[in-house]
Figure 1: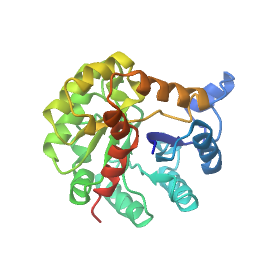
Figure 2: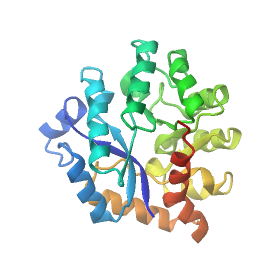
Figure 3: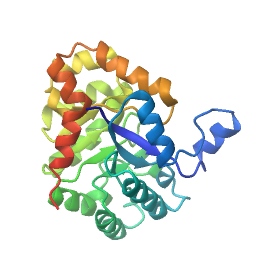
Length: 262
């Protein structure tokens, strides 16, 4: 079982992806549910955490982007676990109401990109939403690795404040991977997602934290099938035991979703 914990549904290329399209980048395209399932089949992935991309840009309709994720989950319920987003820095209570609406739609996690959404990961604007995620043990995935807003230690502040919420440090913290590993060592409710990690980073981490809190992730469909296959090769090149590799590639993610209490 291979579960990718970081895949984007791209329903609108407005913003950065519009720039990439003008530059001729092949991944600046619409990636709907059907295309993503074909990509997953091509690289051999069984399931994924499906996140919006367009909803992370404030000039797009992020509620409609959540609806798009929910529709994709309804279309492929055995392939997608849907995550919503919201904008707590605009209106914390409205963010809570949107999260509750998305739970009714069948979504089972929250994604934040503080660098794009213009609030630090440790912002008090998040507290009302995180009270809800704590109540239901909903996983919260943060993009990290682009200071000043998206830092692992900022996520750690929230993890200490809301110990019942599972927090996923996206991209392994990128260049801040030392902070990411240290955060996971200090907080048992922090998980690291591998899309930004190098093999040496993974080797460093497995000596300092349990494999049960590492999640395989890719940031697909960016990079297409070559990126999906490369991320698999990276995991298989790291010094994990067969049991650790099995946990990281899928079992940890499944256990995280099974822990949601609604």
